[in-house]
Amino acid sequence: MYARLRPWLFRLDPELAHSASLRLLQLAGGLSPAAAWLRRRYAAPAQPVELLGLQFANRVGLAAGYDKDGLAWRGLACLGFGHIELGTVTPRPQLGNPRPRLFRLPEDEALVNRLGFPGRGAAFLARRLAGPRPPGLVLGVNLGINKDTPLEQAAADYQRLMAIFNPLADYLTINISSPNTPGLRQLQGREYLNGLLKALAPLRAKPLLVKLSPDLDAAQLDDALAAIMDNNIDGVIAANTTLARPAGLRAASAGEAGGLSGRPLASAALHMVTRIAARTQGRLPIIACGGIFNPSDARAALDAGAGLVQVYTGLVYRGPGLAGELAGGLAG
Ligand SMILES: Cc1cc2nc3c(=O)[nH]c(=O)nc-3n(C[C@H](O)[C@H](O)[C@H](O)COP(=O)(O)O)c2cc1C
Image (cartoon, rainbow, N blue to C red; front, side, top):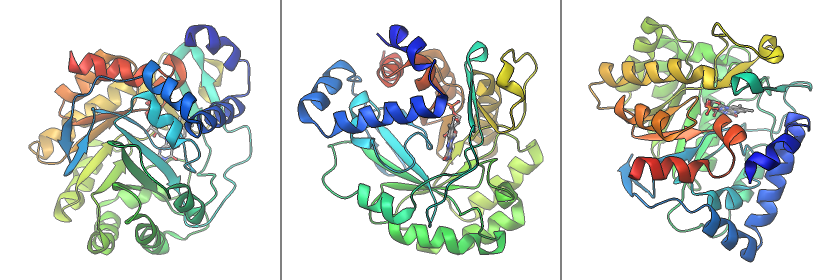
């Protein structure tokens, strides 16, 4: 069905297509017959797994950025995900970068985005999380800083967000790896990260993860991991989008500024998972993210040492059946 819908969706401006899909999922999630239909149509085989002290219905999650403001998570929860990561949320609302800021690279099965954390802010997302939860769904919230927050005050932004979302989320992710907020990725440096995590770890009431950039070189990754292990952080997500442009990209939009996601990111993200698992002797829980499009990609991520996987761009290219397909492949 999605194969027939996709050409129509792809004729729309990418951001418009995204908001239309979110809107539909929001409506469906609020309407019980529609939600029940989606749940039947997209059910994923149950394969419970424990990680971070949480029970996940399966190993497949939705990556941050898809539903930044928590508009459609009840509908998205009907698509078979074991967990959904909302956000990135910033303390105050902000517009993000000027449009156009999201581009499809169809020939490469990729996207480039330079959204810059547009969103309605923490108070809005907190309201969206009120009310009963579908049983068995793990909800994470991904935290970011406002664009005009100086890096020296980054910890205060994250602390404020932790205070708000500790009681509402099952886990929290510190996002220090988006390429679209100036200076943010400097927080991955050993000194910065150590200082930041020292300021945040005492406020932790839920498992706390750090999301890393695939653009760290081996030494930078080792430094970041040292700070993460020294501060007993619960896990990492590898990886965010990349500023690199791997050789062989064919789409015209490959030259757009911003973070690249999807197929061309797969090998760098997998490599990163392998290195993290080796460096931490498998002691640090890893969520693999980047270019996971089919069950063999997901299997490779688990074999490399990840406990869970997340998808974003795969959902755009493969459609709403992806979580069920991946979870089915991993269960079988
Ligand atoms: C349009 C778009 C927006 C994104 N926004 C966020 C975000 O707000 N926070 C975040 O941590 N990651 C964000 N990401 C990164 C994804 O969560 C994911 O790490 C990355 O896209 C790699 O996975 P994929 O290849 O499956 O898309 C975004 C990705 C895309 C394509």
